[in-house]
Image (cartoon, rainbow, N blue to C red; front, side, top):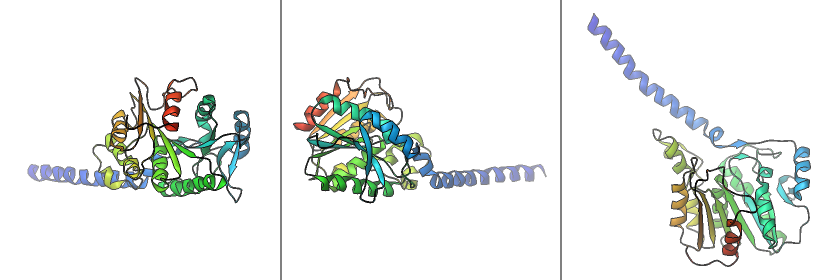
Length: 281
């Protein structure tokens, strides 16, 4: 009788683990987008009020839909820069890119792209949805005039910017990638070592693959103590790139604590590289 009870308990224990593992896999697969995207949302009138003091106004498509933020006074710049932010917050949280490029005094017009589902923009974010919207935004800029367009990708936005650079290699004049990563599965594999995330993830954002189809100048700004995507993945992305490249690693900085204020010394070095790119650095 005792042997039967022991066997029964062991059998139940053995059966419990596969069921629990399957449950974890199902939850991870079904909720992965909720784990990846953390949009900040606000009413459009609130964002318009916040944008005005920063010299920005609503950037709209041909159907008057809000797609981001542009300079209130256009036509003064000699080049444009299109910014793709990270997975949290919304575009107006990235005013440091506006301030940094403006402080250079070199005629940069900064456009902050908003992801669907973020800020006041309707929709549900996913890689396919964001990339499709990003294509429309870039093509809108390219049709407006012939001024060169540079792309900025911050964290997850680095995957978006790299994708566009590969798709429009002759129209994209250069990239600035801030705390980028090789691919989202590579990031997930560092955080979920016990899950087959490379198979489960539908969202890929494979910047390394995309940059293999681009040959323009790419500047990399990495955090030396990046606990989110890791310095290693950003370094690997830089090292694997065959085109003109610039690298700055900020020692001790975390993923969200890089010095992005206009007085940071890397701004001028980065700008000089993008405007007069040298060979591999």
